[in-house]
Image: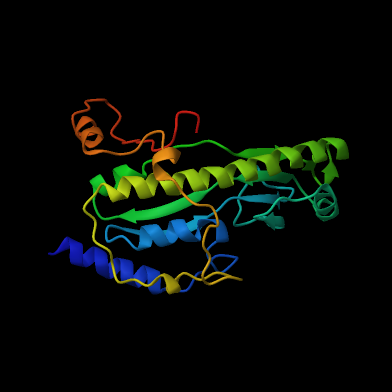
Length: 238
């Protein structure tokens, strides 16, 4: 069986399906990143989120946050304000949780060596309970403090997306990769079908580390007990 042909068929099928996310389109801040990956023969994205601030009500019987079964009180991919949070908190009947979730990107890779380029770990989240059984457990001053932190994390998240794009692009340019004929127009946006970054990128400057053939050889010769492969293509302070 030609596994490359099988992967291409799988990719074509997945990318031709309708976007079933709540928003129904790719988030603006990751459109170029999704296009970059889907334009390469050995990758395709299955889901993505540029980062968001959410307020969830998990009800009065929930012991842990289950996003599929809880009430979404607030979802935004932009900075939010205290008044918006206070208003929707009045609708909470159970345990409301304020969360910031950073970039999430799920990618199918043709081979293990392709996946190595994308193996990145980062922690940049926030999760704080605000109510219990519908009763507000914190002050409005503290809520305002949390929102400032969440908004700061949102801004930092955008910088990391930019850095990730630059470093990934630089790493891919060092590999002999052929382009697919999958058109960028297939990636839907809610308000802008031809979004491009206004900033001029400088991959050489943006990347503190990037994948090279020597890096890959070192990984192949690594005898650590951990079977997973984690390769960072970010600067040390990422």
